[in-house]
Length: 251
Image 1 (cartoon, rainbow, N blue to C red):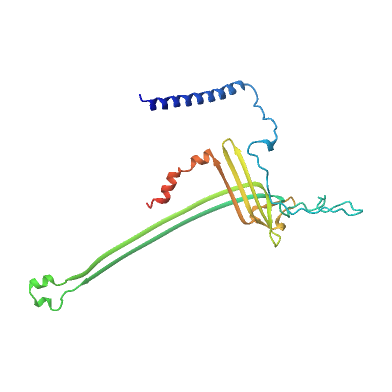
Image 2 (cartoon, rainbow, N blue to C red; image 1 turned 45 degrees about the vertical axis):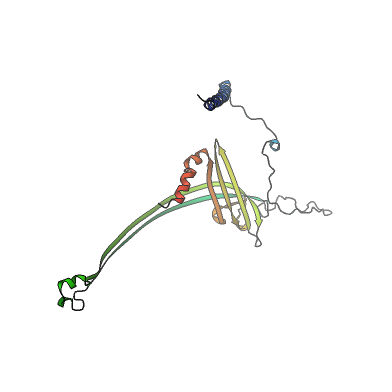
């Protein structure tokens, strides 16, 4: 056995030993928790966790606070009877996503064509008066073609989709006419799968309900995306090599 083969065997054995130790530690931890309730994680400072980044969102211009003499109120303060619906950059509102789509389409196309072309010369410049040998070199049938084609195509589409959920969105822009540009994103992780919902579009302040909610059907230029990513979604997709061949191969 060569030295390189021996080194590969040693490295493989070391890797198997490390994996066995790791799985053994996990098994020991699981055995130690038999009959006990799962322990909750300790409350920690989120800003001290690895990968923490401060959130930066569009915010309105700060208002200068001014106090008036003999007044209980100041500008920029919240009031009990003030309209609490979203109206400026940075405000939040809840989008009620209600999407129901159903379509049934059936198409059929039939096409048929038959053509025939025949051009003959029976007597070319007195060919009958010539000898048999001369008639052999003279043209008799110039063109004789037959063609036919037929086509029968059928297609059908049956689709039914339903999506109903709620997502909070933030006002990112106020247009000159007063309409609000909103965008919201929601991510939910279950085990090793992440489900994400994205909603974006333009809304009128008049369409926002008194409870600061708006129906997704009243969003102009609506962009609604619902999907997932993770181990299950990755397993359901064809491999990258297969996707490349599907694009490049002409047949």
